[in-house]
Length: 288
Length: 277
Figure 1 (cartoon, one colour):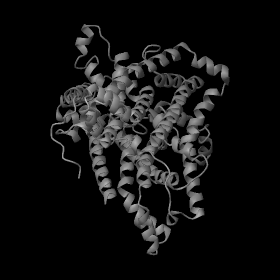
Figure 2 (figure 1 turned 90 degrees about the vertical axis):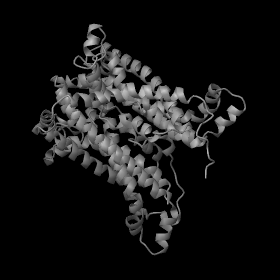
Figure 3 (figure 1 turned 180 degrees about the vertical axis):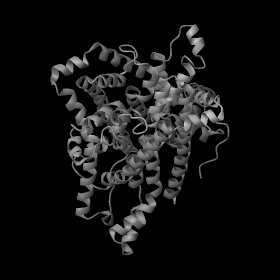
Figure 4 (figure 1 turned 30 degrees about the horizontal axis):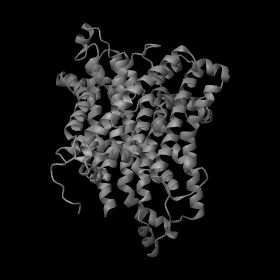
């Protein structure tokens, strides 16, 4: 039921090998060398290139690019978008996981598949569908123009498109987790006289906190880094509807490479922080 | 056997959580997606066919399909090696490498796009070595393939890793006791066992590659008929205010995605049955 394999439950490392499972030394060494070479080529080099290009013309140029007012407004819009989208998707994720994991009803498999749907949709199409609904020629286009409300080529469109592409992250993290935990603890709490809300807050929430955090980290990374969907609905109005990834594109297309890579380096740092946090959560949840 | 549960749970909040979930799902996902289908349905049949089968569109389909297929295949092979090494062997810095596998997932696609373009341009770190060999990567179809390989890798590795971890050691022991060489065990015992999982990882990487936009647009050069991928074509149509044409191509892509999602679901059911036995 997954269009992406990232769940906390599936992350574990280390296995105790029996003797027959050990490969000969030359096999071990050559496979390790192949794997590391492939990863160096495809993962490490691009990452290194971002920072190298960003700092190539010196720290002064770097700072000037990062502190440029347009970059600054892109940072603000990116943070604002994530600050709206992530909480919305958290509330949805918890509600959907509660309904799906704790109760039995018809059409559960269908609902779970529908929640995964945005992962299967191209980001460009995720933006396109909102243009078809809210754009000038869209369903609500004329009405919106009459009432002077802008959604497409404005901040609301960016928020909606981002909500679409990050929609499944929290839910798909929590559903298998809560299903595995069962209902026994909640039944115990209720029979001891706790209210429904107390049961959720005191019993369920502590049980799902690592999974929830994991989902939030992934959701946030995608929300801040989304490019395709946002690019379709943003209209690229400088200083107004540019998120950080769009700012990278604009600077790059203007051949301002050091500027583009300076802004890109902020996003690369975000990615590294995401990876570190993700690894820490994996470690903590494995220990607890 | 789990104890039988009554149909009606004593837990509260079903109506509220279900109602909110359905409303949010409808507003954010289902209604907008329906808009694309309805817009395309507003076209008559010949117009729809014309929109989705012009030579330029067909060329884009072909490029997206072939490059995604090739990237998925390369990722399946190297993803298998990477996950095998990460699960079975120890080496210094393994934890860091393991965490770094998710980089394509965490790194915004636009950043990946400009980084790969810079690396593979004729003056770049990698491009300057391939260019004298007559191998141009940036601004060719090969560049599209490189970008799609970059974004697909974690899908194969992260699908394979948990399954490799849970492989029963008895299988390999049994094969060894019966006199199989290590490579025979790999090809006759392990690979058939892992086939459904490998296929799932391949399908996930392929599905992701088909729709990918950000990392490809910079490196591909975007020449119509030659290095134009389907998502880019949708954007081009939108910029020309050809909403119907864009919707028609989008509907074809959506149908392919839904089919792939269905296929992936079936594959996962199949591989789970393998593991259960």
